[in-house]
Image (cartoon, rainbow, N blue to C red; front, side, top):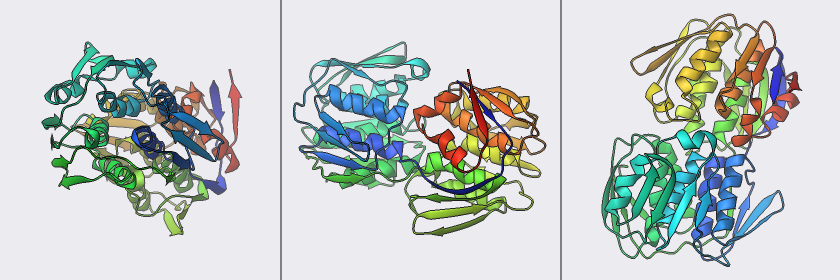
Length: 419
């Protein structure tokens, strides 16, 4: 599906989508809990649905009435295969969980996930007594436990998601464990995992995100679990307000542990006005947005929407942490440069920084690279373009935010769908 996004001024109020990051963690913990979990304000994006399919594969009864999802591990058992779709978070969370079982389990992937590396999980798994094999360092992954308590070292520079999976699974191991982590990136996402584990009754000792002491033989207790609004998805909405009008975004928790809460720092630097009250945020465009400097080392998913923000600012903005973009749904740095160049915006790289020179945004045809965040960024760029922008493959937003275009239209964005 292609979307034609027309230059538009926006206003109004919209609710933030539910956090798919908290949603997937809640699903993983629900699978391992001893009783029913009632997930309130659930996400229904493609990544969340992949997680729910995995819960069903483990023998859980899953009931979804739209407003809440019930997960009951009534027939809990080890499946032969787990289908992770295109969700990198799912395959990295559930690989250590699959390692709790003594039979071999294969974790399958689709599309772009087949090209995302998995070999960084191999050595820590082996240190914990688990058999693991990959397809030359990529999915599918075969795993055979049970995971043995002990000490394991891992490099945290490639992905915090695998660490999150280990933190969720090791409390159920038959003994105590120690995880030693070097160069940990995306620390807020690990904080998110620890918060979710605590909500399910788990206890982990965190020593400055370098060592994690995990007591074994714990049990997770479920109950009601409320999913926060998603700062990752809402970041695009907030940026839209900062470049094209005045909008209100509801259901965004102030002081959230979500990494992309940091988007507010960049928006403030542009001169935009931000007012918050009771988890509702109002963003108003400044008269002349100014360039900004931002460190995205621990929140790399903000790169695309901040590129759209920078394109609308006077001067050159810089975003640090480019090396975090290589193994996403696309090589995001190169994809952003390629597509924004098509519409007249210059992007340069120097060392680990991306430099975006703001200026006139032209209309034209661009490609989403099967990357939901690239599609959202290009949609934002169209708001102040000199002519409509056609986004090829725009449907990829369904991966994390299927309501994105409907929400943008509710704010006054003009658009058409074409085949």
